[in-house]
Length: 111
Length: 116
Image 1: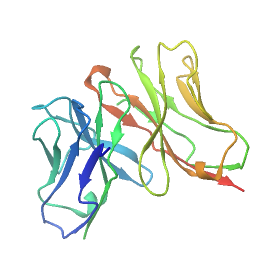
Image 2 (image 1 turned 180 degrees about the vertical axis):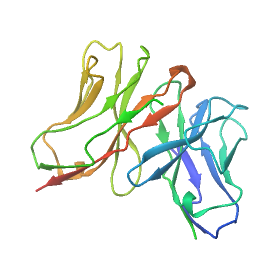
Image 3 (image 1 turned 30 degrees about the horizontal axis):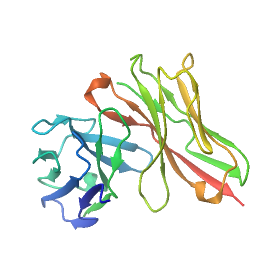
């Protein structure tokens, strides 16, 4: 029962470095999402993908890119990390308009 | 922009008492639905309960229930008989407009502490 798996769990970057957060789900969901969580801000949607081959911006897309590689996988890339991108990142998937299923989160620190 | 508002940053409740966590939304989409999630200190997001706008009765899941008032655009979570394990952050979420996009937006969260 893997559900939604995201890697890495922790990462420390220097300003300007790049990295990719990987996410995979095994529940055959069409929709996948990337959120970031910051203290006092709740969860904010970065990008989402309603189906394989489609992606769309959420509330805070600047500084990020995404790739929906196939139905299972949805990756989030930081091309040039900034301290403002220090956050906890959650990947999620969803069957239709039902509840979101979340990964365990990835804690990213940008120095 | 569409907003989900949770006005209580922090709440305290005595063990075994009931507590209500507030959530208001500003959507006018008739197909919206409201979700509540729990995030314990370990960090995972746990789905608690869902209320559809066309549901005739307030949703109930064990000790969790929704006090859904359309006229006030509120969907408050009621936790009955609080337990120490209920100490966590709680998030309300709603389908962003248009709701058929599948985007779900969240409120800022409420931290609940249950006192023994």
